Image (cartoon, rainbow, N blue to C red):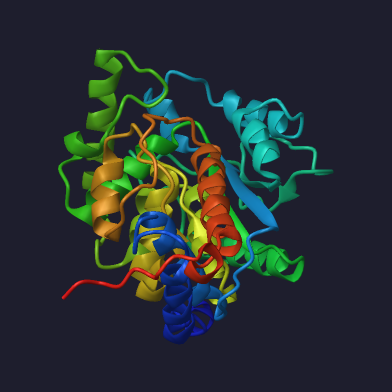
Length: 351
């Protein structure tokens, strides 16, 4: 069933991209002088199959879940923080609340595996179960659960498409998810564990070394198959990553541009691309997370972040900041005058 859905992922529309670039070249500026902002516009045109792409209905999807590996001491925060922050998203006091308000984005808060009883009046209930198992002792989840998580993300994006959302961001909340992300990134990028593991939420040096050893043990115990991304996700991943993977695939299926947040979100994006390479066409990177594994994942995705702010908050904060750059790109494209308007002879490339 998942394979059938992925068959609906199409390619970028080249004719729309060429027309958008032609319009950009006619604006009163040196050719290519807006750099990556021009690339954003052209890609949006290819996604939307038109030369007038809209990004005025934004949403950030935040996948929340707990991770059994926390019992190994890989985080300085107790597991209960996951539920606390998930609930705080509804109170408007978190970082992503602030940045979402700034850019006018809707927040979609999803419980896909929080180890607590959550009030669902505002939070979307997609709970698979109350947290994954401890990946240091065996698989974090079953293969069926991994696929169910992916399907949840795909379904959420379909619903948002029906609501008219035309620009998506990705976020997450889950104590221990830098450990799961590090394990996945090590396997999928063939990187040494030491190169992709960060300090997370402020570990001591001793706890940091323990985190490295725990991730190594998880990979050794489970032997995830790097040629089977769902196997990797199931054995050393998390429900939040599964849901985000589905979001990236769903965005590609529905032809909606989707912004990668930080490290955890980028790992989910990489899984999505390994499941269907065409999913990459609909993704936009946001920022270069301070988590060291981000570099390896971005290299594997062949992407460069728009911003480098040494952020590592998660929640979708980087994606929300990138929304403003995308807005700026569209504003320049739609509001700048042409050379004719400015009474200036158009620039032409020199031989």
